[in-house]
Length: 421
Image (cartoon, rainbow, N blue to C red):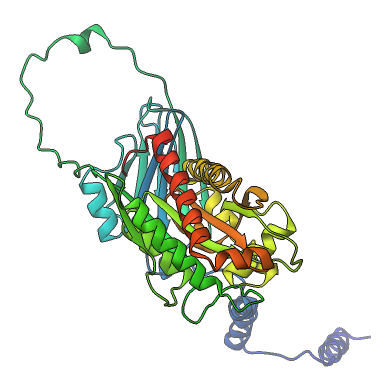
């Protein structure tokens, strides 16, 4: 076959191959454009359906609303109250620099800045607002042996726990007087110490919330107010004691507002008075509670009734207080106050009435959860029991209950010699 014919047949075959379905010729510019669109397509689709979270810099700065410290011989704690959850970085730049905790894209509130400026934080914790819109917490080298850093939610908080190092030996150089005089900058004056103890009495229920009912129509809100007023009059006779009440008449007060009232008045003790109820009308007696996890179903049911919440959600939030600022100190003092009150009630009422001691218990009462001072809730009798309902309707029994609560509070103050906060 002539060479020219071979060339013609080769061209025909190639044209036949490129006539397959889905294949077409494109100008160079159009082909490049199509390849570019194909390369970008997955990226565009991913941007529409992406699970990637928004970068923190697109959010407003996290605000540190408050800065708190608490100390014991073997532990120091710093708590930063945040308005939202945020990232935290930990740096160990060098041995000399100690530890630096950085909160990027964060700002100190005005109240937090003021507290830091007044020098109310321990010098071990150095909290600063940096020029690059971050907040840092520094622990100088040698000021601690170990530390723990963790975040909490509901509400958002950052907690720094530090085990302080032992006392630093005094060197000879340090003992020598300075060669030149050093002018000490003026220091903020400490707030004047309180010369009195503030006790807040909380009569349970009130107004549109009558509480538990007796068979004879007795309402819990009326009994708790009578006992509280008598207890107030007794405590006001004590020297150096200021007594406040969450309500002194038949009005409704929210549980959170009761705790807020006590905290706002810097109370040293909080005593909430209630009357118990039980499906079995033969049950009677007294029991004293402080805040904690319910140890049995009955305590959980009682907390649900007093809180006005469903049983399934009553225990939720126990973790709120577990790592909070004064948790350990508050719970220990509340337990001591509860035991003193229970023992005083037993000794004062025993021999006068058929008394049943149900002991000291823990339960997640909302009214105790939000207080920052030692707090108890006293269930003084069972209104569902016919005999005890009858006693609650007499002035003599009301007076004896108030006297026994007074004895418990004064015994606690005497035993602990609790300084005013």
